[in-house]
Length: 267
Ligand SMILES: Nc1ncnc2c1ncn2[C@@H]1O[C@H](COP(=O)(O)OP(=O)(O)OP(=O)(O)O)[C@@H](O)[C@H]1O
Ligand SMILES: [Mg+2]
Image (cartoon, rainbow, N blue to C red; front, side, top):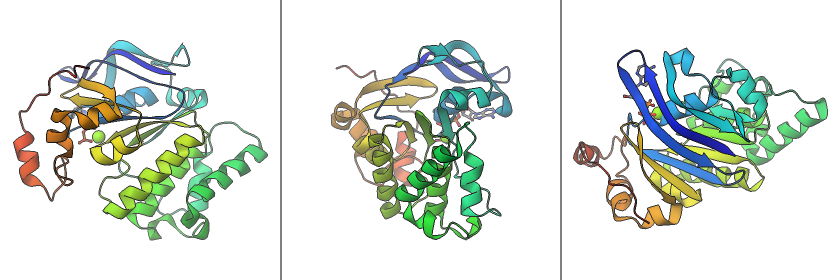
């Protein structure tokens, strides 16, 4: 359903953030993209959702297509209208607005009142805590609840493909597991998910297929089960449950990761 082909992205004249990346998502299921800090995961999401411009980036080579139509080069609103919605990194919600108003702001894809009511219902069923707190300001929610709200807002446009950028970042293990379960449920309801994560264990537990990125390139790809069983992925991402890069509690793991290069997955 989504095809990213040979994609090269640059920021300014000197920074190449993606180098000839190729990956695909089917119409259903979760596809995970793993990789350490600076690997290019967010850049990939920005390219797909059409917001590179806002960050001083541009596609230098390659293309992105969705349901057989080229979407690279289209503006972000057209990409949302085509059915691709991104929930950006850092759970940006409108903190001064109520939970319900945040959700309303997400319902940008044209739809009848009945369709919109259904979208609210779906979000409130997935996240009952948001229903309970619908009249409260978003600033009063916990970090985990704000992440739920950010995902819920993305779902209000009833996307066919939901792009999630590090939904577990900075959350306690229990909340990470909860978010993982909800992502599975979203997928079971028929919305495909492209999930960027540094928490490889969570991502691989719910994904069907996964890619590993390093320094702007896709260096490994396989079924989630294959990657989970791969020595390289185990050593680099799964060995110690806290050894994911970027985890402030595992500075040694992050340090030893420096300079490591993965070889291409041989299936
Ligand atoms: N707006 C920007 N302008 C210039 N360089 C950028 C910009 N955004 C990202 N980069 C650079 O592009 C590379 C890829 O960054 P990106 O944010 O895509 O990585 P990431 O895999 O999402 O990392 P993280 O895990 O830290 O979120 C990095 O070297 C980063 O410094
Ligand atoms: Mg990122």
